[in-house]
Length: 462
Image (cartoon, rainbow, N blue to C red):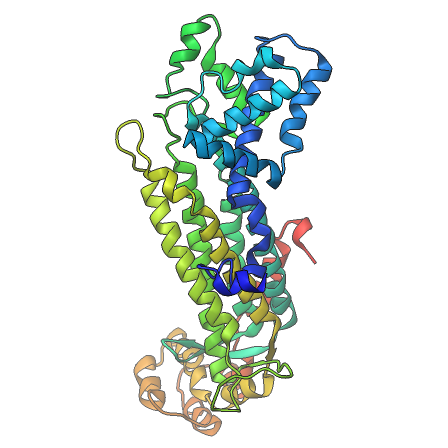
């Protein structure tokens, strides 16, 4: 195992193998062959049980089910041996199933395997089932990330922090509100991701049911195909295709994942920035080294790792999301070769998610450092003062505050002196401005956090 990791061509099976292990059964060659077997068996059973084109006993039907249910990596290796002779992966699956039927004494139904199918009738549904499982796994990880982010949102919803626009001091917010900004964005996109319908087609070599209709013209093959896809595979049926699935649903899925990945990169960069500012501290781990020459360093490596891996995932997803929508005439093989990389892009996406979660689990909030910045930036209240001056018709409010504060720090006394000589602002408003601290000027940040949690589905509330 150690040797395998050291000589692995890809980090997915090398350095980061333990982070991607649960993707192997879904997106590996074994995972693909297993789903092909499942689709072929479901189609065969549909011909027998739904269309009743073949008559066999109930016990034999159970034996056919078992071919898919008991399929293992060891059986997949047998399929791959058959493929060495056929030089065709789906035909190898067909021959494997026929061999198993012969072993069960079911030679009479062998030729119903792969009935009227093109290879892509099997492949497109197999990939849809793989993507369904992959999406479910990613959704679980995204929900784990949301729990971490939302916990910070709750804990620090009332803890003030100086915000930054263009990297410069800006009107205060709360730490919790900044976390909830990300939680809301991720939740919104996760909801969209889970609503995308996984689509499959079962309509023959060029999508017109040519062979189906030729041998059984009395069967409503359009309705039959749709019934098979929806009831047997739990997918959304496609009616209009060429030889291949047009992959619009995969494009939508990947574009949604791109947006989630981009939001997480944004989160990674903000966490990196807050650590750089000293607002967030990283928990120390005995024995870890931050630099080969600077002993004091504790680097935000988890967020950097996430950003880098999400970048690779985004690049791959962007390519597949666009490329899969294009195919020459009825079909070329470019879709097949890029679809085999679905596991890789899910791998990089998963590594990014896991490292963001890991990074968030290792931070502490340095409230004194955050408070120090608030106490040293009284100019942040200039927004409040000039807004009140506008309301009560003081002359040139923005320009006067700009002259007092722009590009320099001011003291509480200087701001108080400025307020005290205002002509039109009522005394009670002037007193409110003079007594207000920067830490208090957070608007409805805390209320917005509460509002977020009030809108969560009951199953999401902690």
